Image (tube, rainbow, N blue to C red; front, side, top):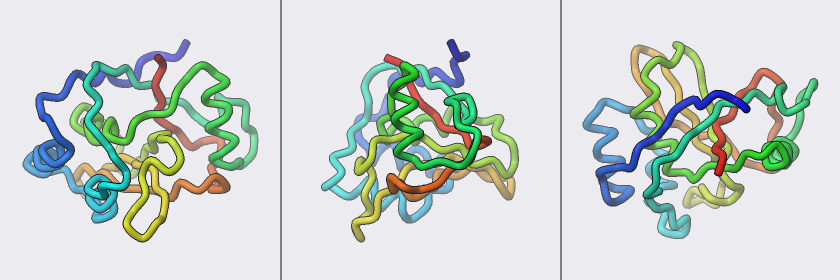
Length: 158
């Protein structure tokens, strides 16, 4: 069993809008895509109510020795006893992950089609640190997107 990466407590905020405003007040930089996706009513993203334990796993630890597709990675995540993460947890995790290495971009394994921008492009969230700032950005979430053994994803266990 992997060690817990972060435990996210229940949010005191009651909506995605209030969560995003709170992040901005705390100097978190949100990409235009993040705001577009989270405010896109077609996505129906809500705040998770429960305390959640998140885990960081490397693609390599799932048995991949070469670059592989996101679809295969997700399949292995589920076969390994982990689950994909609701999109709002990336927002909340940013508040807890303050010791991130500069230049690191950490992706969240969110369900396909859970984060679609208004142009119809699927995304997954990623946390970054650069220029002495903390970011929430996105990465494309196509089934055939390629990732490498050193890449890491955030997942949960239920």
